Image 1 (cartoon, rainbow, N blue to C red):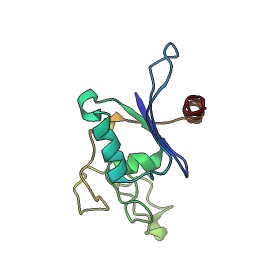
Image 2: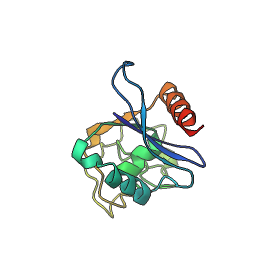
Image 3: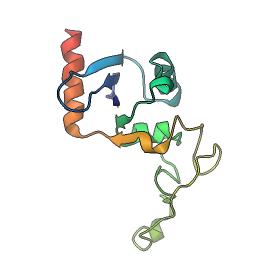
Image 4: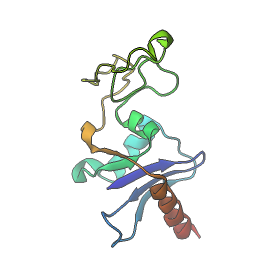
Length: 141
């Protein structure tokens, strides 16, 4: 499993083993890279992500980038459904929004082609984020 994590000044990619028997391995680290589609694509090319096809454990913003959604204030910002964020009069009335079926560039805030199959993304818990910070900080100093 691979984790993509970013703070305001760093972008980190860490390889995590299932279970606690093996240590976490930092595979990419940058002090001045931002979370953008181009930067994540470049990192995935360098670590041969498509050859190994790891599962990704990350936060919601990176999942949106991986599914190629536009960042920032958008109309259809959810990668799971077609929730209309600008339709304020329906937010408390409509409880089930239609499921997002396709990720076609140019439609419903999709900017690029997605990186991979949508079932490969897991959400990182705070414990994993802390573990990644400790691993990278220990290897820095």
